[in-house]
Structures are given as structure tokens and as C-alpha cells.
Image 1: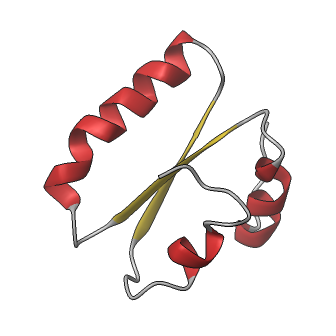
Image 2: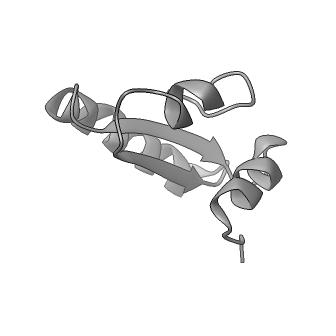
Length: 72
């Protein structure tokens, strides 16, 4: 799932207490990381909420503030 303002309640307000957010750039390396996450997702269904967001996307500032992390 792509993390966005609209989907944040599914990640942070869901029943699952374990989630992983992939921060990836809009490049070949980021595309490969997203593809690997998508391939692995069925193995974790019902156990871990998987989400991804772009380093350069509008949402990155909001999510980094929510998690108290920074993009370097």
C-alpha cells in the first residue's frame, strides 16, 4: 500500500501493531525495493502492515514528523 494522508489511518489506526514503511526514491533502486516488498507482502499478510512512500513525495514530511525521523 502506498502511504498517503488518506491511508495513514489504515497504517496507524489499524488493528495491527506491527508495520513496516519503506522510504524509497523515484529511481531504479527505489523501484526494485518496492517490487521486492510487493513480492514479500503475501508472506506477511495478516501479520505486518506494509506501506511505502517516496523520499520526494509530498507525504514524506508528514510521515517523518509522525515517526520523529529525518530523511538524510
